[in-house]
Image (cartoon, rainbow, N blue to C red):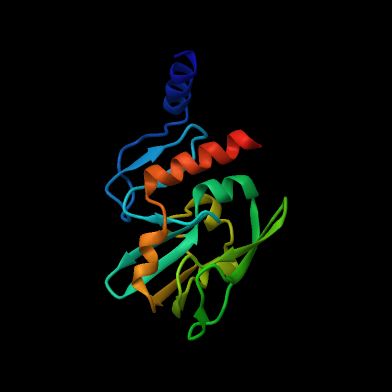
Length: 165
């Protein structure tokens, strides 16, 4: 109870709100570690998210992942026209703490790359679900989305993973 009250007062002091401000999703929830997890997205256990809209799926790394990485200083992305395979690496994120591969949660053809990240890699930290997206893919097997976690499952996954460390 005391932790919940502290979290609430801290959120108020930091002006953190559960009000929807994202054009990606109608709402979001905060996990115990204050990482944002959006409704309407699918999540991989390797901490990437997918938003499937029409014929295109947008992919990026989660707020939880960027929080653990720290300040992102460089992003390596593929060229449009290439392909990605579910679970395969398509790029890398370098932070002040480490360099990490970024894996694709689904298979498909890369139709667009967020070129803003080459000039402003910090967008991954400040806006992981909006301006910090990494690639857009035309899924070759949309059924792969069904194997990914929803927001509640991903929140629980992150809490269990953090508790184990």
